[in-house]
Image 1 (tube, rainbow, N blue to C red):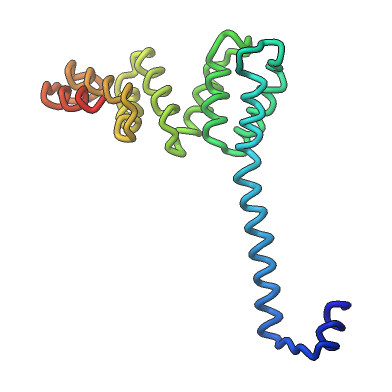
Image 2: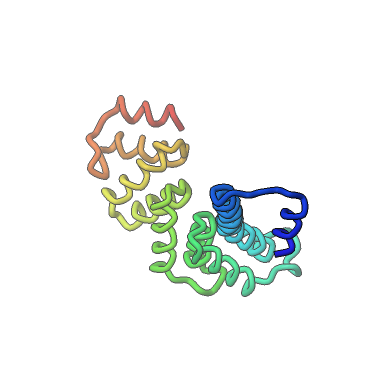
Length: 178
């Protein structure tokens, strides 16, 4: 109301359309800020988690807090956090090994196109001798430019594995890309 009084005093007239436009602009700014925060918050949680989980000084590590923050960022759908949380679940060194949770995290990140998660799933299914599933993930990672996946796809073509037809030409092509 003070604002309106000031406008009246200065003899500034604001039409209904102008008022609606100002309100709409404020709403857009607020929504934009919230959207930006929704994007940056998981990344910040991930970065904080990494400070607790890596580095040259083990005295500064706080594994429990790092995993908690990583899980929070992953729950927000941050693909890199999903990938890293998958690694945490997959590796024995964190003493919370759970292959099922690791695969679930990687699949969620892979659904977002996360290359390292595609590669991790491809390598996992390759080890499990589920070659067709492995080839699907590896091909997706290879097509996104991952050189390790490109090499593995070359091997699949060379041997005719994973439902891919044996082809020295395609094998050489994928080896060359890697």
